[in-house]
Image (cartoon, rainbow, N blue to C red):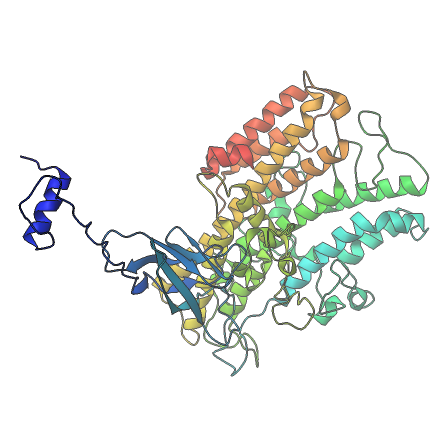
Length: 584
């Protein structure tokens, strides 16, 4: 039999002597309500973990719970200050807050937490949260010279700077020099291009100023390192360690295989640019394939943007080729990962040959030493409207001297593209993290070398080192492939106004030329790695489909279809997620 709640309550009260049972009339049955139990305030707030990873956006610390004698009571949590927020019962970093363990006085933070129950009774206490100091910087002390860093790759910095200065000159200064009558003929234009590409050591090198960035710590390239040029490091010109003879028939992707060399292609692009400059010097107005005036000296009549083609091909034929085919290679004795790790690389050096070879490979990736402390939007230089730290926009004055040290505080080249592609998949189910994969691998490999300075690596250690190098290169190459896919998508969209059903008035010739040239310039470099993920046959098919210029007047529909096939080759070769491919 189930008692009514009121009857049951009375029965319990009688048994406890809280009510008096007495005779009398039915009207004499008044009773006093039972007292409401007193509320107990919470007596503790518990955090499930008291550590937080550095350099992690919205990093979670732990889960919050209350200690309260009142069973079944409900609780809310709050935190003092603006570094942390509470999401439900989870303590995490506030938006825009990134903790950095490097260079701080203490790794411990005091956090004031409050728990409040349903009756507004509360308990507050301070807990100590420890920042996890991760291995997140490419920084290693010398085992050979006390109080010295063993990291050095200024030659790679110099070549990144030369590529940047050449690009800056063509894009922003060449036309001004023509207008100012500083360049009289084709020979003068070519001499100016070669001033950056292959400077004369005795008469020019000390004069090459750093202009592409306003606040460089160094004013001249010679402030960083001795004489360096670009020409000597183009694939085929620095033959030691490379897996193909690029100057003897191996170079593909620009006409018939072997019909031109990497150096020959650069010379051809320079020649075309110089011809455009001469046309401007002579007052000739060049026309694009649709009959419109071409206003930029570096844009060709056939839909090629020479500033983009030159820059992207140099990034591939020098920086990627040198890293993937030389410094991270294992096929050539005394080169790359097979070099000596016992003795100084030269008298007085703070590093071994192996340390230096690995550094040089890393240097060509172009990442700042504290790359993992940046967000993707910061690496990409896309900070705006509070979506990142404005003083981390592509570079950061980490040592606080008021200048950007191009040896360590700037993100060059393809390290930037990796972040851009990660940004492009951030909301997708199979989001990429090429930035973290690359730097984590490169740091792990360099640590293995540094830990074993003074002894030859065992076969097992060398195999592990090779694994770290190839993991880093895999992320690097995938970021390049993703970038090619991104520009295939752009070119396809650019061509839509010229395709069946399109409105040619919506066509932007400059955009098409820029995107085509970035696509082609990056794609040409996928042959330069001995670890490449694309087969030779598929690589050649890829470039047959792309051509050496975009199709603008003939079968545009067919060319768009060919670009789709090119994208399919890359997706299959690298097992790329379909959603990422469609939206890069």
